[in-house]
Length: 452
Image 1 (cartoon, one colour):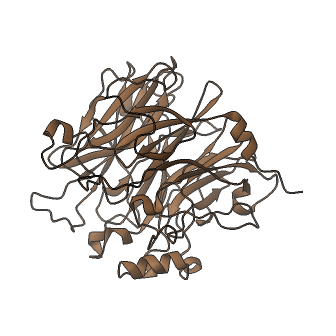
Image 2 (spheres, rainbow, N blue to C red):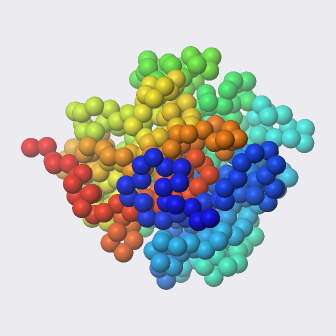
Image 3 (cartoon, one colour):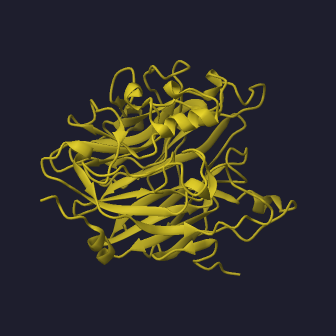
């Protein structure tokens, strides 16, 4: 039976299509071939030179399962209908291959897929070992729109203060590389210290945001000659100021719940996205433990950054509420911005902290439209209008009690501009991948007026 666009949803005012929904399944005796496609998350869309949409995502029986793989699908009608997914890569006995993102070089049409492959627990490596998830960034590429792919190529990175092993990192990728106005290609990713190093819960991990500068990806065809570096350069990435945020209520509550310490949490920032302002500054948004989206600003094309601060609706306005989950910001083609967030600081809907998963902090999915304030330095130079619900999941528990991970709800959204239209794709319950279209009239209605 074909799924309805409203299956598992309580609100979906901008419903457009379903990229992928697995067949109905429940119980303890699900055939292995069905169970292996029940978890679907971390989806990313790119548009090929001929207008074809290509999406990649992580699929498996659950998050961190040995059968996790990356799959891909295509659409030739602006995301309305999609091909059946096919395998792009699989995890191996040693390495987990799950979170990655595609990228298209606009001139050559070469298609890339970037990923972090980290070591699995098992084979003598206990789950609380710092060895778990350590690995390297890597990429594969295709010159025929994804029909065939190259071998894996690892990317060597310099060691940082947060690195626990020489030449390897704990990290993950959630967003595609972006071409900045000066032509730089930057891949946002997260780097963190494995919680096994401090023998505490993974929810207390310390982290920072980083951008991989793909220096000659658009001008060099020989992958052996590709050059990569980190932004910002130096011993550390982009962090929140520990001293400034040590008394933040959300930080204190999270530390208390998991029996940790605020000074180990307050600098955490992860899963960045970056947008350019008209004056040349770059603004990143990231998830934090602070009860709000974090933001940081660079005035020198990513070389140096301000500390991560809490994002507000306006420079003098209230903080935007948001837990520790993905919070992408994207620039619309006309220079306005869209912020995708969940409007919960870890205290609403019965949540006990900012990493309280399920539908407590990650449902509904909200969005707000922003614009630049000329000459404004505070708040990243941005002002946002009143938010609106994009979609809301049905919060009924599944009959068999299955959850794809500890944090589901609606997650990992991505804005897509195509043919003068505005789309957002996102994961539902980490089981299904959906696509909505926001009318231009709605975006106009939600655009804030500039301060007088």
